[in-house]
Length: 596
Image (cartoon, rainbow, N blue to C red; front, side, top):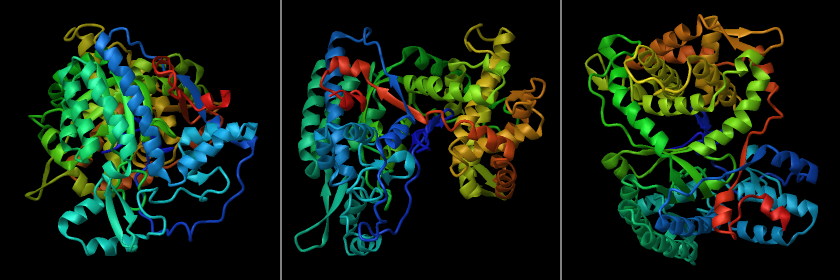
């Protein structure tokens, strides 16, 4: 599964996800680089002024969450969970590079202004390579680029070395070699061997497991107690299946994700999971909103702008979605562009049995809205349109986007053959599906707004206006397109922009600012939804490819608009105020190092 909307600049960056407003980390790349002998020469390292500009791409943002509604036991457990999460910062650094911790320790000794600036940016990236600059080094005397295999494999190992070795192994040994939770090292005889995380990172994982057990003893919530105990066991046994199942069943005010999950840092094979942690509090109000949406999904499906024969008369069970507010993030979850949502677990056995769960970090998305989206809107929207921007509209559409991935054609039949849109549309499916979820999310909210206006659902249930919905979504297009059209979200968004432009729904003012033609915007989005749903229903690869080739482009006017956004921060640098208050020794942000 993926982190939604992380980077992309890592792309949420994307992120948001951006996903529907957040960004996401890029997919792991296959590479045949042979680090370090084939590594490029060390480039000049940034000056203090250049480092300042690099750091300024992240807007410092306080992350404050009220814990007043937690029980006394959960408040005590929260402290233990933050402490456990902080340990994973260092486990992740061990996974990223063998020299990471030594460089970190040396930077802490450097009291010069340049040393302080380097340490700050190091902590933002949890290493000496800049995530926003394609993994390029910003420190001297380190590899010029992040090693493709991070520290999961020997630095002198090539892809061919690994593949030839795996072919010599028995099936169970192959499974371990390719598994999420092992590192590959050289034995004394120079042969490769797989070592479990529980052995390789024993010191850190043992300390984290002890804290998880303490937290389990403090909470009265049975599902949280079960997950924390099972995850502590997994840190010792290296078997994460039971704890992943327990995480899927987690239903508690304290919503915690901790352990090895995503494989983005393994750019050799995408096999190895990096350790991360998110300590969150559940948002009860937004969780209740999800329940309301869930009750109306079948009704919305029955009114989709597509031929009735393509509608699903009986939707399957909805994958769980949790809306939370982040208190603290660490490890793979706490570097570079910040995750605003994630979709886990990755274990296919658990997914087959329980599905996957989406976790939406509402306060992180709100921070991105205020720090990134609003400044973007000021550059690209007319003053009149700027008046209608709304975080509630932004976040409500993100929820609708996620829910409507499950609407429309899922299983299709072509010439008597059962198949899926994904299988038929191949490499273009991602961009089409992301765009489909975007515009079907708009359709779903418009449908509910219409039902609300007709008195069929209570007024105020959807507490946004049409103008807020479409204007805010239009502004968010520029945030996603800012990261280019290489990945699915950006490509699908550029296609949507040009489709609207072709329908006359987008108006370009004399200053180059954009507005919406309110007589055309709703029909244009409805037409686009019809087209995208029909492409999926018919498995029309050629049509989908043609649509993207003609519409997913950045024309001169759009290019000029995007160029105006260069000075706006790319993402946030979270300052974990609440976590720091509860656990004073925790590092709240990279700026903590500059104050010492």
